[in-house]
Image 1 (cartoon, helix red, strand yellow):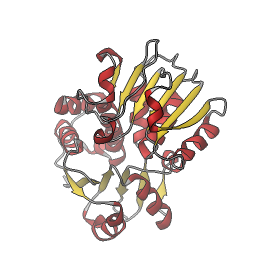
Image 2: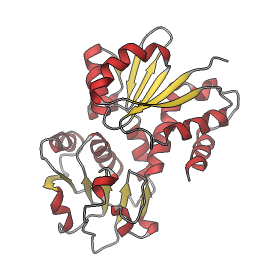
Image 3: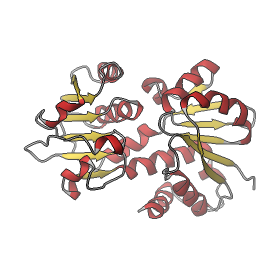
Amino acid sequence: MEVKRFAVLGDPIDHSLSPVIHQAAYKALDLSWQYSHIKVNEQQLSKFLSEEISEYAGFSLTMPLKDELGRIANERGWQIDEAAVLLGCANTLLRHDDGRINVANTDLVGAKKALEVLPTSITSTAVLGSGATARTLSLATLQVFGELESLTVFSRRPEPARLIASLVQQTNAAVKFEWLPIEAVADFGGADLTVNTLPSTVSKTVEVDLSFSNSFVFDVTYDGGEDSPASQWPLENRVDGRTMLVYQAVEQLRLFGAFSEGDRNVSEEEVASAMFSAIL
């Protein structure tokens, strides 16, 4: 069986759990594939892909490369999936044997899977941050919660949040969109669902106002420490960011052909369980 090489790219990257979960999946599927991590920043990505892409079958991309991958894919005329086009960012690159390149956003699949455990009656969402992951989670909430009435974005600058405002208009214009400075999250009244997409170094300095009614939090950093915003909610009201991480990776595995090339007849849920076991 061919030994395919994959890697996750980003900066910082040493903390990434992607190598752990992908290798766990390869073991479950009896694949002799390899998965590593490589430190690459935004300025280096274009050159890296030009010089190294032939050595790999595919890449996962994490912060801060998702917007840059979308830009490069458009510039080079690569095939881009619908979610990546809509969101303007991508986290997955697949190189075919004939040289064709596919770029995709699997984060949206993972985000929606993670949110499915919450009540469908959620009517308000507060999103901390306005980058690529914030856009993805905003779209996921718009698609998962049919009763959503408002979506408020808290970030340092209003300009990036305009992309989220555009998503709201395209997806459900009846939802009220508002941008507020990050400091305002301390006393805005809370939301049914608070989504934290800020890096842990930033989010631990942010005080978050909780709703008086029962509410939930989704911290994508899967940090869970006492300094994280999620620590203000009861354990049963928290969505673990590792759920999104695992299920976006399951979608990547499907795109990479892992389930068709694996020697074992293992389901996606069984692979997901092996990945969770590797990091919990």
